[in-house]
Image (cartoon, rainbow, N blue to C red; front, side, top):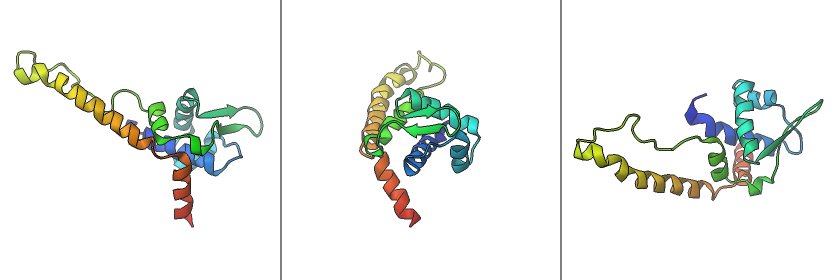
Length: 141
């Protein structure tokens, strides 16, 4: 899975957990829905657990479940839980400090990129997992 699909896969997994409530789902079951390796699913579930969105129960009949109602989970929260680093990273290597553009471009971009990421998260925060689940159910019928 590419870094860019982590967020989409995390939303898929949470929507599946909401769809199947109150049943607990194994990482293998979730991986079957996502069509990826269970190891990938477990890594994302660990990030979602750290963010307080999911919990696991061990033993026979165990699996994963949501910790909060789907109406209480926003897509903004999911983004913050699984995306690492800046959405718009600056140069991999420092631009030439002797060039007037190279010397100042990162400073000029920092504020723009920060505001863009904050705007994206605000927009995502307006949609809950419950709304997304309703859309999925509507499309399925």
